[in-house]
Length: 239
Image (cartoon, rainbow, N blue to C red; front, top):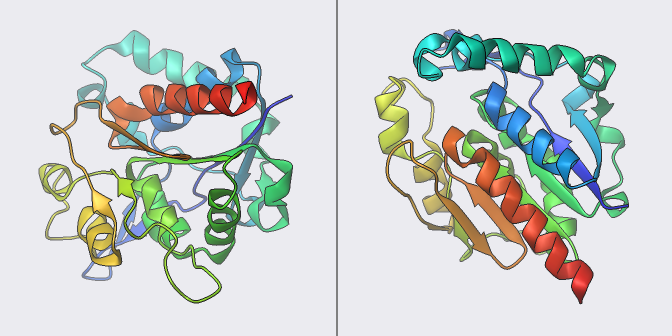
């Protein structure tokens, strides 16, 4: 059975430029949509967080204004998360993961990854290991793309340098009100690290596939990026 490691931030705050702590966590749809897609594909899904800490959903992701004022959509998301039970509340410790056990790794978004996964050596090592294998797929969406930053080759270089990548753009971060508050901006950091960054229309679906690397720009890109992972894995299986 195809196995996917679904990595979620365990941070519940994001430390801003002025040192203040902004309540955050994972973005509901950026976890739910990939989980749904991978489940529909029949994959074995393992949810992991740094320290095995139960992740916190960012309540802003369930606010009416983030869901087209559709109360039923919000209730459906809350019910989905609750139905996962201990699968979500008792995730695997990321530190205990053996990358070789998985066919793909997908990092969900939300501002949480900016606090922990963007500086996490373990997720960096997982990305480095699987990226080097053409029969594996590595993926992330929105701020989860920040988890690519700690990946390092043996010679100290960044394995994603020169690769086509997307993620939440500086324009989108500014529109969310954090352009001048964030300690660093994802698009700018990825570009400075050497990524060939590609941004689509603000808050519209945009997915970039570069070999065995799949990245999505924002919440609207969660489902299509997960579907791109399924397509990529199907291609690997067919070979």
